[in-house]
Length: 306
View 1 (cartoon, rainbow, N blue to C red):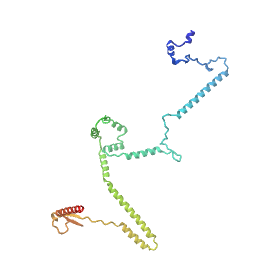
View 2: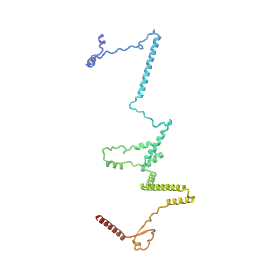
View 3: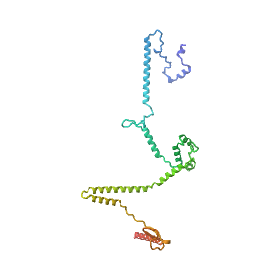
View 4: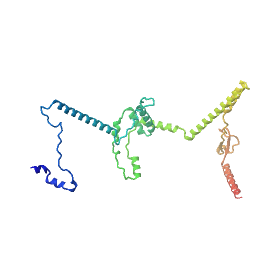
């Protein structure tokens, strides 16, 4: 019996631990340590011993609580993979007051989003009208998003086929009369805008007018500062300056070309219904002008050779 107690391991365990790896390892099972708290107390034990045991238990529990708190603090300090980022929505101003940046940022985001969106098609305008009037909501838009055209395998397909599919294979969404008229008005406003060159010319005209006014102001200030002249002379000089600056430039009158055919053929005086300068033109004159150009070219070539 004593041998069995000493050799508590089975044959299989002995053969396993007989390997050279386990040399010098104590295979005997440790005996359970008996503490003062685990020893059962007799009824005759004194109250002092019981109080000491209770105090020892309380001290152990307090130490365990302190260790747990320290572990929690260390875990909170070292959160691997997480970065503490300041909250952009509750920013603190220089004065120390929290600003309502949440509403401000939302309004800014909406404004920028409005600039990015351009309702260019009739279908988009109808959808915008329906959303604005409350005929459609978020749930309806999600439901419409699921259709036979939503999920299609397009991998490995040729480009010409994909272009053709995008043109023709799509949903025919309903449109309204109001949306069509709104898009037409929008296109009219876009077409009514002047082209870039016209806008640049208008800007140059404005700049010239501003420069003229600045020159006039400088000259009028010099005239006013002159003490040797009377008020009447000053006023007359300034008025003459204004007339010069505001005087319209003379433009050459347009010459109207009158073809000498029909009633105008062989006409000696002014033809009917024509005002201002005019010039009579016919086929022979055109041929003569061509001949003159040809002769000029020939003369230029001869001069170059010489």
